[in-house]
Image (cartoon, rainbow, N blue to C red; front, side):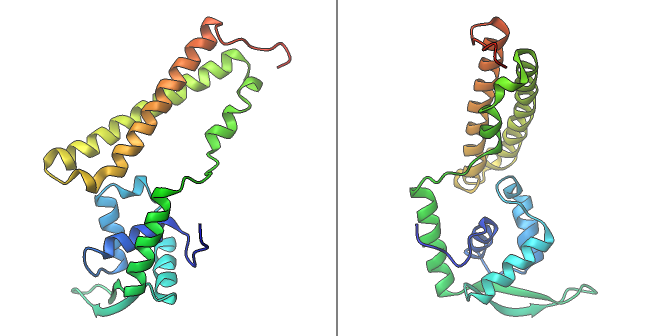
Length: 191
């Protein structure tokens, strides 16, 4: 994968939004939250404005106008540049095509599950399963509120993907906890 000047996935989200129309940063943040994209991208005002600044610095986006609504401060509206569109499409293509090691914290923790001992490990997995079930319920609600009400499925496809990943993890956590409790997952004496 070639080295990118900008690697922050929030930049990917902002570039994706600007495919629709020019926007100011506050509108970008609001739109991402309205569309439940804050489950896929970490959105906070500081990082959002830093990302917009980086995109503009590298000429992937450019200011197109400054607007003021009522007593609110002036807001700069940004749009894609041709370079920005090309970079966005190339970056998106790479991310979809090429799996990369992401080193999730849960996988790291599971690699030492034995250190918890059988009872504590089963308890921890069952608690994780409860949290995952809540997240799945939230994803189902988000999908029902959007796709269920006529929004194109493609607009929420990442929520669908994450929901399926959570379901697989939930099934594994429940199954593994049950194996620990039943004794069918042997526990070495060395722990």
